[in-house]
Image (tube, rainbow, N blue to C red):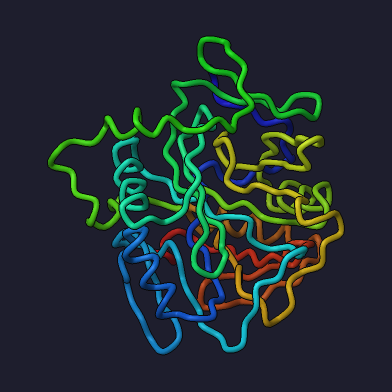
Length: 307
């Protein structure tokens, strides 16, 4: 089955090679978090200084951790639902999941048909998805405000079936080790956000930044936007409640995530649109920081900034 098609496009669509770069989190205990991501998820520590650390697959940072004192986990607020780490194939996902099972890290293997995935939380409650693509198995659509998934043979699915872990583990060989770092091809596939209002969020991510709307499932209170026809680079939901406030300053969780553009001209076009819309911005070391309407931090930059 084919990939889902964009429901609509702005007069300007974001460059098709735009993607998500890294996710920056505020954490209460840097040492514990680094240990978790290194040992349980196989991330490499790229750098560390004072109360910060950058981690990933050996090249560009995928995750930046920033320690701050006296933090709490809040519910009923906007922010991170999960960030999604994309593995290059089923074998590499199987290695990552086998490591979780060996370490007895609680996770929830799920079959989204066109992706195979598992969900878990880090020690401070930040949501994580580990996944690989499997478009040969089927696809999903969002029609008439409903989310529907079908297998390639036409069978209907709710898109949230338990993953056949035994079948996935058949991609492993006797020589595969589970105590190895994630492969260098691993990248940040997408991010999923809690927002206070989906149409408002779409006005920002679609109407201003230019991501294409891949679907809006009103019954699910969820929408997906992407660049270049990908199923989604950014997920949006109101599962913390319509009108949810932003987290307080002493909250653990999302600081910002980066939207990486392939070149300066594609970034400049979006910056002009943001300026014309009157959206405040702040130039940081990572790039140009904006806040979406739900106060989620979005940093715009070119890809070479993250290399």
